[in-house]
Amino acid sequence: MEVLSVRGGAPLRGTAVIHGAKNSVLPILAACVLCRSPCVLHHCPNIDDVHSAMRILQYLGCRAERSGGTICVDATYVDTCRIPQELAGTMRSSIIFLGAILSRLGCAELALPGGCPLGARPINLHIEALRQMGAVCDCSPECVCCSAGALHEAVITLPFPSVGATENAILAALGCAGSVEIQNAAREPEITDLVRFLQSAGAKISGVGTAKLTVCGGTPLHGTTYTIMPDRIETASFLCAVAGCGGDVTLLRTQRATSEAVCQILEQCECQITEGCDTLRICADRRLRAYAGTIVTAPYPGFPTDAQAPMMAALLRAEGESRICETIFENRFHHVPQLRKLGADIALCGQTACVRAVEHLHGAAMHAEDLRGAMALVIGALQSEEESTITGIKHLRRGYDNLEENLRALGADIKCMEIC
Ligand code: UD1
Image (tube, rainbow, N blue to C red):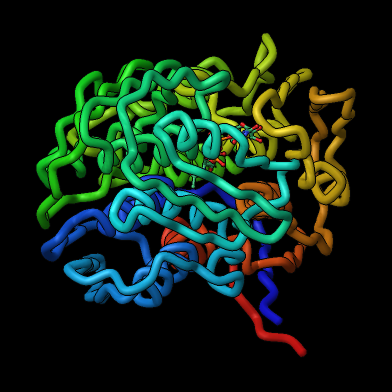
C-alpha cells in the first residue's frame, strides 16, 4: 500500500508546471471514437483516469498509444459497442463513451460508471437527453443499454447544466442526421475544449462557450491534432497550497481566465496573483485573512466544486471565520473529519462548512476518500511542522500527474512510501 509522508511548515517557493486538464482529455479521448482516421492529442496528463480511458479505447478495438505527453488514437475500426464492468467501473467519465459509441455504431452497452463517492451521481439526465434524440435506453442496476435505428433532430433542455450529460448529448448528436439544440448546456471550459477538438475534426457546432449549443450531425469526423487545455483544478490546487503554506510560486502553462473565481477569493484573503504569458504567480507573504462572505460552489463560471476541498484546506489558519457552501454534490465533505485530525476547527451544518482559524496545525494519520479531498489533506499536512501520513493515495493518482515531484520542486518535504 502506498502512503504519503508529509512534513510541512515551510513556505513554498519556485515554479511548477501545470498539466493538461483531466476533465478535458477524458471526454476528448471518448470523442476520438467518432473520428475515422488517427487523432494526435498533445499535453495529456499521465494519470490513472487517462490510462483507464486508453484501456477502454483498446478494448473497443481502437489503437491508443502514449509517447510522453502525446497520445495517438486510431479509431478507424471500432469492433464492439460494449464496455464491461472491470473497465467502466474504474472512473465516472466512462459514461461519456455511451454517447460516442451510440453515435458511431448505433448501439452501446455500458456497465455503470465508477468515480469518486460524492453522492448518488445518477445518470438520468444523460439517458433523457439520448432518449430525446430517439435512442431506446434500458437501464438496470448493473448496466445501461442504448440502441438507435436513426437518431433524430431534437431540442433538449437540460434541467441542470450537467457537465457529463452535456458532453454525452453533444457526442450522440453528432450521429443525428440533422441538428440538435442543447439548452441549459454546461459552460465549463472543458466543454469548450471538447467542442473545439470536435470542430477541428470536422464537426459543425455553434454556440461554443454558451448555454445553447447547436450540433449539426450526420457528417463523419476525421482525425485531427489537438492540444489539451491547462488543468484549471490542478491550477487551483497549487494556488491553494501556496495560499495555505505561504510563499511565492509561479505556475507555468496555465492561465487566469478559467480560474477567475478561485483567484478572486484568494485575492480577497490577502494573496497577490499576477498573470503573465501562460503563467500565474501567487505571492502569499502574510497571514491569510478569512473570506468575508460565503464561498458557494456553482456551475461555471461560479466557484468550482472541485476546488472546494483544496480551498477549505488553504483557509484552515486564515484569520477569522470562512464559510463554504457545497451546492453541486450532496456528499463532498469527506475531507472534513480528516482535516480535524490536524487540529482544524471546522463545523458542518448541512451543506455549509464553517472554518475557524487555528494558530497551528499538528501532524496526523489521515485517509483520503476522493480525489480533490486527497489534495486537501496534502495541503493541510503541508501547513504543519510535524509529520503526517496520508493513505488512500490511489485517488491522487487518478487526477494529479507528478504531484510529489512538483511539490518537492517548491521545497515541500513529501515522499511516497510503500508499506505492507
Ligand atoms: C464533472 C467533472 C467533475 C466535477 C463535476 C461538476 C469530469 C470527468 N468530472 O462531473 O470533476 O466535479 O463535473 O463540475 O468532467 N446529476 C444528476 N443526473 C445526471 C447527471 C448529473 O442528477 O444525469 C447531478 C449530479 O449528481 C451532481 C450534479 O448533477 O449533483 C453535477 O453533476 P455533473 O455536472 O454531471 O458532473 P459530472 O459530469 O459527473
